Length: 134
Image (cartoon, rainbow, N blue to C red; front, top):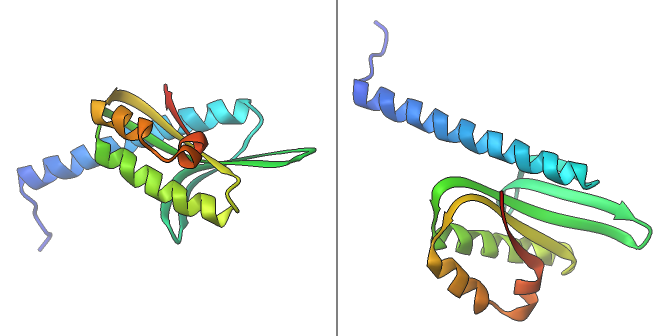
């Protein structure tokens, strides 16, 4: 006998797939943007610090620029979303000898607490983090 799921469970599954697809489309848009700027893009990279949406690298005569890019495409971006991103970036930057940068690419509304948190961040970390609305 085939497994039967309820209409409620089916609706949750479909909703989850739609959110995943929406996020993937946004990640592709952000990747295309950075690719046009000359970066090489790796997407959905699983690392020891968690999944990273995009890693962008660009070589030039003085070295290589490396960016960790987090993509959030939702109605309201929470402080928790941003704090997790900053924590992940701190680990990522440490692995790259303090020479990495990070982009928090988003579509939606930032919770006002994010700006307060960003303004009070340690100067070293704040310099490495860019908030970019798409």
